[in-house]
Length: 44
Image (cartoon, rainbow, N blue to C red; front, side):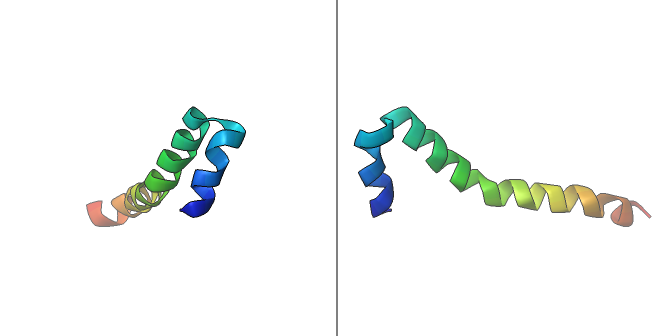
């Protein structure tokens, strides 16, 4: 988390917030993709 704080003055606050949010939802997107791929098997 410390390296995120060091980036704020260099690239700007909005970009850091965007990267943080994308990092947070990456795992949830992976779970969603797995659920979509397993849906046909569950419907049989």
